[in-house]
Length: 510
Image (cartoon, rainbow, N blue to C red; front, top):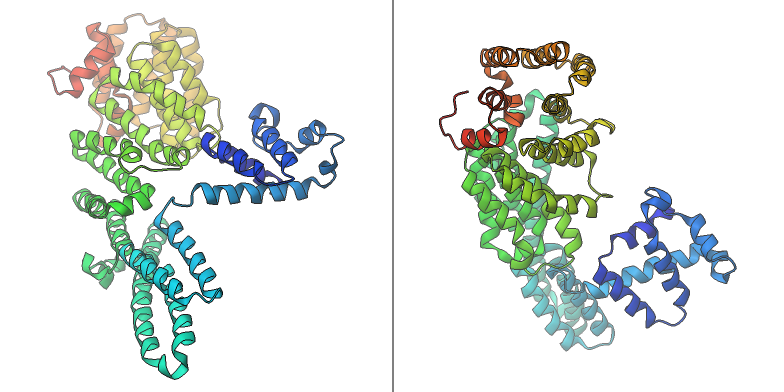
């Protein structure tokens, strides 16, 4: 990122209430009129002006003749610091950590004024709060201030006993910090070994830290313990163990509600780690409860900085909810949610990764297809096909298959011939032309050449070929469920009806 973009990014990250507060805050400082004007000019810049970056040329032209433009970099730096100062004021009680840091500053001020009694009183109060919430680094700072005051009040010889007690407490705190660091170090090694397919990766199983949760002596360490065990379970395809540790992580947070308020993102991550496992185990009611749990986080814990949190909390949650409706065949519920998802995608367009954007576009395209809204489905499939491909090759594969199905429904047989050829080239290039894909492509090739004459026999033949395949290709069936689509054509019934019956385990002959 270029340095000149930092102020632009900071301003664009502000919520409406933060912007409003800044303008009130800055107006209380003399000589900030130009800074507020610059703030408003940058705030109004959009992607159509500049792409994704700050447009300094437009700023200079807009303030041409202004004295501060000659030293714009100085004005920008002052404005950036002023915004950060306003944010510190606005979020002064955003967390226990921020409250304790403010108290540390107060302790220092009182100490420097010689008000040792008041400083000690605040240290005691802060120490209790830091101990309760396991803020170990702040505890170390508080003990340092305790030592300073004891030295002043007791003198060197008289303070020996008191300092010994402080050293004892410091060692205990450092032990807790080292325990957390040990778990982090182990977790990173496990991730690295698995990503690099290191043959020695199983040796971590005998690490004493993983014997049981009791080896973790604080909340952060226990959280890391369950995350590591969950990660190992995922790498080893141990679904039941993964479920147990993902659930244990959530239960750990539930026992410490203040930790949820302090770190809602980690809590939501723990929930979102459990959801895919519940999908695999068919625990759909539990998935619904977990999604609702994430959605209610902001109101249940009175979370501030909601714009930032909303994105972090709802990115995976929306995708999980769409996947839930797809798996259950609840197409109407998925269609209803799409409006909300579209607003979310538009609102956070600048920060959503292309992988997630591709995934959402495919989900939306699928629901429109299932609802027989083929033109809308095609619109979102084209969004994927017209963008640069990411590492989600699986989604691009399903996109191309679904694209052929949409054009089949639209009776675009001439276009299908072209799409068949380009899709086959794509599969060959990606080395993904398996028997499943071959059978489907052969069907669409025949359709394009005969304008779908003898459609019933062609569909029956495709169904027969797919059913004869081994289970290695079941993933392709899960994403689109082409067998149900074939049956809908054979029965001359809407796909949406059959998918609902199939997902609810009603007797649909496929």
